Structures are given as structure tokens and as C-alpha cells.
Image (cartoon, rainbow, N blue to C red; front, side):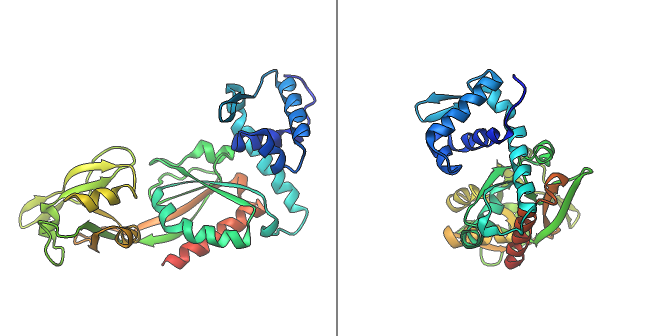
Length: 302
């Protein structure tokens, strides 16, 4: 690697991560294709690496380019934030991408209304929902790869992070129409007779719904586990499995699948959906504006 890199050239790399196409990158950055190709040549010379190589469907990042991605995207995001601070923030002029680590449940309940709003208020903004596991994606938030994490199960919040509760929901139970066990209102006894599906991001089948009734312990038989909040809709609609999950999610099930939904007959504490971000993006005008938009959209769900 040679000294004296023009840092503006890093926007070429950042764009190529997304487009995998030098022509699309040139269009995105309002430059000619020859100028974009010349800039890429300078980057290749500086890093002594091809960075992006041609493949049948465009250009693919080399391992060197992949290793640089987190740092490059963090730099370009901060550079845009600095530029925006010199003028009054206008979301209609905003460009860039917001990366959110979350679950497909949040995508289902939030994305349609959010995207409709952004099309009017911030048409140049791109939104990427990325899958999250059971643990907070701390390294990705610290490096700027992710701008936000949204879920109801993160624990042990580390220093340097902010969080806010954006939504609260109770639990309901969904099952197919003409279920052989459930007749009428779902009772606790029927609930424990059924075979259950379980949403499990970690792959464990731990059940927190054991109950002591008339001197005996009742517990669910977990027959099937899945990481997907939404994929289970097909399973519940076409089998005798029942699923207990946040009520708003199951309401969406009932809108699109032949399933019935009732309040869970077993008391379960409400789930709190929280939005979490790192101090790296706390004062970024675009990210701050977007967090307010998210809070408003979540409030509409209540």
C-alpha cells in the first residue's frame, strides 16, 4: 500500500460493494464511466490489489476489499454526516443507506408503512434489513456496518450504546382453521394438549411456559423450531402445530393465511421492542432523523 491516498476515492469502493458494476457506480456518483474506471485504477495501484474482479454477473470484491468494507463504509458514512452538519438537514436531499439488524417480524409489521413514508420524505435513502441472532451485534454497530439494531431480546447493554423502547406487545396463539383439538375459545388445557411450534433464534427448545395446575406440572410439547418469525405462517396454516408469538405478528398471519388467532390462555409478560444504536451515529443528522421516523411509525402500531 502506498501513502497519499485521496480519501474521496473510497466512495468508489463503497458504491461498488452495493452495485458490483462500474457503470452503476458512475451513475450513482454522478461521474463518467471512464472517470470511475480511472479512480478504481488508482485504488488498485494504491492497495496493490485488484479490489474488484469481473465475474459473470458484474464485479466481485477480492478478499482485500472484503476486509476493508467495515472501515470504508464507516468512513463514508461519517464523511457524509460531516458534510450534512454544514447545512440544515433536509431529508429530501439525503443520500445513503441505513443498515438495520432486526428480525423478519419487525420487517413485516414496520417496513410497508416505513417505505411508503420514505418514498415521499427521503426518496434518496436506501434501507437494508439484516438478520440478527439472539445477541446484540456489538462489533457491527461499533464499526458502523450496522446503524441500528431492533429487537425484543437483547440483554446486557454495553457502554457506548443508546437504546429506547419503541413498541410493546402481548402474546397470542395462532392455529389452523378446523383444528382437531381446539374448539371455540382456546383454553389452557387445550393449549397444553397441542403440539407447538417455537420461534428460536439460537436453536434451543427451552420452554418458559411450564405451569403448575392442580398439583401437576403442565408443559408444552415443542415439535418444531424455526428461526423465522414469518416462515412459520405456512407451517401453522398447513399443520396441527400451534404457535404463540407477539400479537401484532399473528394478526398479520390472519390477514394472509387461513389461521385463527386468540389471546394466549397462559399469562406471558409483554415483550418490549427496543431500538439500539452506538455513539458513533448518535449525532449524525440523517441517523437521528431516521430514528425519530422509526419511533413515530412504531407508535402508529400501538
